[in-house]
Image 1 (tube, rainbow, N blue to C red):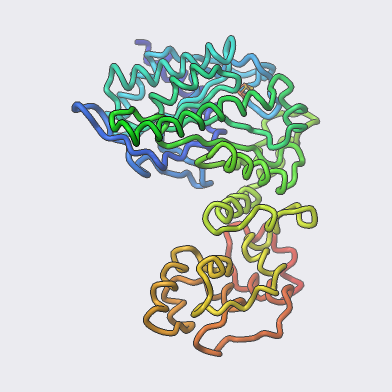
Image 2 (cartoon, rainbow, N blue to C red):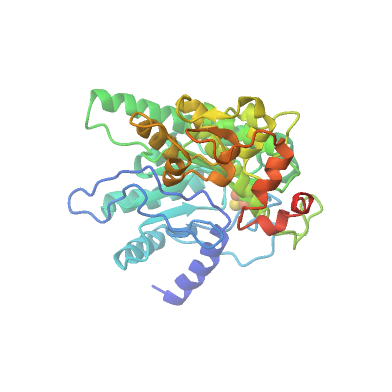
Amino acid sequence: MDFNRIKEKLNILADAAKYDVSCSSSGSNRKNTNKGLGNASNGICHSYSEDGRCISLLKILLTNHCIYDCAYCVTRKSNDIKRAAFKIQEVVDLTINFYRRNYIEGLFLSSGIFKDPDYTMERLIAVAKKLRLEENFNGYIHLKSIPGASDELMYEAGLYADRLSVNIEIPTVSGLKLLAPDKKHEDFAKPMLKVKNEIIRFKEERKLLKSTPKYAPAGQSTQMIVGATGESDKDVMYSANHFYKNFHMKRVYYSGYVPVSNDNRLPSIGTQVPMLRENRLYQTDWLLRFYGFSVQELLNAEYPNLDMDVDPKLSWALRNMQHFPVDVNKADISVLARIPGVGMTSVHKIMKARKFRKLDWDHLKKMGVALNRAKYFILCDSRHWERRDLDPQRIKGLILSTSYGKFRPQYSNQLSLFN
Ligand code: SF4
């Protein structure tokens, strides 16, 4: 083995993979059998770099050769960069060696499209298959589904991978047409649908026959690039909602566009990556999945974009003051979940604790409620702090003047209005 060449390939293909953020490993539960190697369980592969991107898996491309020319991608065929491709066995050896050295706990394998989607998908599957069947590797494997790959290959991929993901990349059909004219929207939807149906089918069969193998036990995910095409937050979140509802996505990831090319269809090189927007989209996503909000409540024709100054739950509350104040000693769980500054853990604590006593501000504080936000929206067993004569703008100003978010300095222009 030529170690220098492998090292060079690793540098090139790990660097090219860093733009893909859809690599969370949550939700898998693969037990070690037959004295095999590794044991994937919830959360074991999580690790995040400073900017919040996941870095813990061996995260590489099989190749950065690509027949397509998506404008937003460093790997696009027209980009003049160093190219490389791993052999299947090289990826298997790297994974096993890194795993044994405790460097990694799983593999995240994506690829540029060489020759055609099926040929590429076959090679990704071959890596996973070798790891599972020949190396008896039970660690976490996340494979990218190649847009346009056949149903048969998608079926096979799910037998060896913990998670499958196909990146929609651009949230709108028109944006995709503009920036990735080689790709069609159906190329993404077809593998997603196949994976969704197989997950359901395997789960049903497992209920009848315990020995039915697992199929993509960590489900499927997708990633959208935000800020490349001038799409609104409404466009992004309505797409995400569509994926959650129709394809049973485990996660949708939002990746602020990193300018990688001088192309007049895209933000110019040097444009700031929209990290705060990315953060607000994740918060919105959380509200849809765990807090009972509908996407239409948070974003609609009147409010097509999220408020960058405050989180989306607070923003919604300020626009809907008729629902407040909420009496924490009486309200339903679904109503408590809508109070700004009250997370689901606190909601459950409130529900439990109020069976035994009437809750006041001290109780709420001890339960982890962020009172600097929540106090304007709550009634409890104390009148201290209560001020009901404030309008939403004033409340927003007071909250902002006592908040310290890591992105706040970028968006503090409105604060001066309330000082
Ligand atoms: S198909 Fe994938 S790897 Fe190829 S240029 Fe488009 S986004 Fe990049």
